[in-house]
Image (tube, rainbow over all chains, first blue to last red; front, side):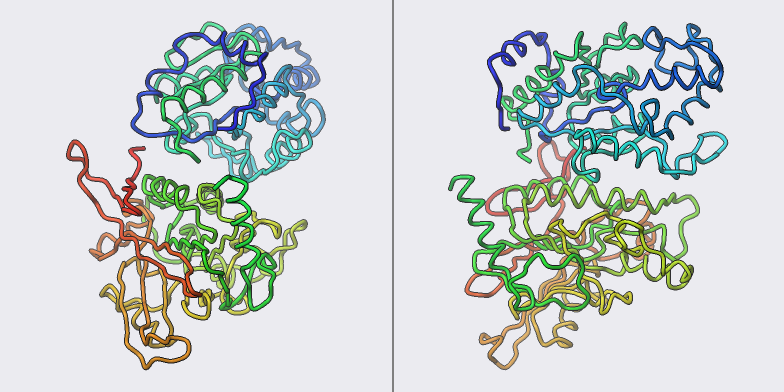
Length: 255
Length: 320
């Protein structure tokens, strides 16, 4: 592990809560890769603005998605939109190229700095995200999404932003329900998430670790294996501290 | 040795690799036929057989990755059936076996990238096997009208390497059959000594398939395909190419998950399949490849795991 840690970053690392890293991770017989996974929409890109804009245009409603309490927002009673309408908005937003769509979403405040610091510390990451693709289909009706433009638009957007370099290695499209199992099989110990269900799945159910970004729909979650940060400036120290502790414990595989 | 020196040594070896007598080791993304490759002394080589992704033995691949990260081969050869391509197989499929062609390519790319990363190999050669050839045969038999379609950006027709997404500037070279007309007779001839190809002959006793191959080529041979692990030697009249008068033949075994539903057809055969691979070093112009058998061993707590030994270290499959 190549650590280029500035004194200022070291100071922030000292503020990482005690008890992090989860003992279950440090106590494993298996070793882990020097690599972590991160979700895209939430930890890196903002997506609420696009949703609100399209919902306003389509249904004439005002959505304030920063206030929602439930990740599956179509079911949140605070929103003046039905689940079916929310799903329709989603299908449009993911195909759009502009700033409202997946091909042009804005970067979350503090994310570029955080991921740059992590990269500078020599810790690579892979984006694991669900974006509907050409063969994605509805569970019950088997209705297919039918186009891969949302995925290719996402890749092109991330490459333009400089967030990924190699689309074959730096990003994988995977459903949230499969992330925890896949990362475990792949000897990945840490995931960055905004989705509380995936956080619990990875951190609690599978005994790995999850750093959860501060969002309204996960603010009440407290779970073993999950560290909820209060601010994006806490992300890099928490990630770097995590891998330093793994290295010290001899829990890194060396590749 | 410092990291910088190690990189310099590795770069020097890669520069010294000569392909077809041309000093252009990275000139090909794809090659059709038998490629004469000249590796300089000191080159470390690993040859992995029959991974059959996504039906690969995932816990065992972790042990292979660990080994690769220790051994750091300069050249990594994946000797065919890297992917299963189950979705395009014309064999009868189990009624409840799920297949998705794109998913197979996606997983195969990830498995391959992990091997390349762990090994640090600068020269990676992927030889077409009969399973990769399923793409060509399916198109030829079922949808020849689509054969003229090419990807608008890469200008590649539907092929194994194009679906894996490797590009011309990646250090990955694909070896296909003659003239890329399908088939899997392509391969390598290392230092005018050792033929490496996927394998065509299948004989039931370990060692007999490479024996047959040696008789056809009159060369030392290494191949996969049979999923058997066997080593044979044959005496010949000493000649310029084989002054010792000994030809070596090795079939390498496989690295697939025998319990995967893609492998279900093999259950009724009670196959004598074995796990294994080969690793070695070029010395005095000869690629000395050592067969590495992988066997179940009983470890702590009485658990049985697949394991292999190399250089005094035991590599065991993952618990995950």
